[in-house]
Length: 128
Image (tube, rainbow, N blue to C red; front, side, top):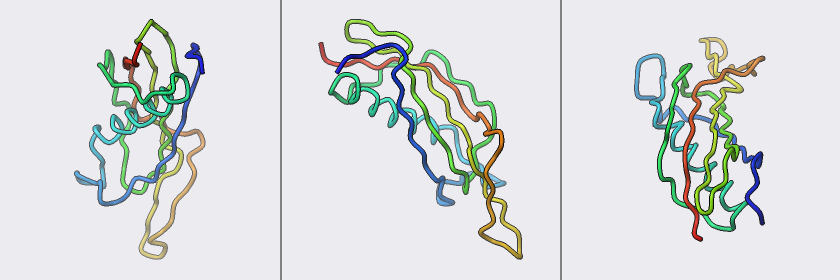
């Protein structure tokens, strides 16, 4: 295993209605940050054979809403490799969105193009 710039990990999740906190079935921003932690862990396992520890975010941008019923994709890309630090760029993209109606309560559609909801830069530390 070698940590190299450009290494990536991606995970998809369905956002359950139990995570809706606000009107319009909106989900709080912390939901996406938790997914960034999960995808960072996977990337550290792939590149370093260790889960690593999240140290900090240097930038977080909430660009579009995430709603219950969405299918989201969280991606981490390694953008800088230090002796023990790994700087990653993160993106949370909505790839499908629920569109319930009275006639079709389970209606949903793929988004084309997908909607970029959250971006961030963060640092993870792995053992030396």
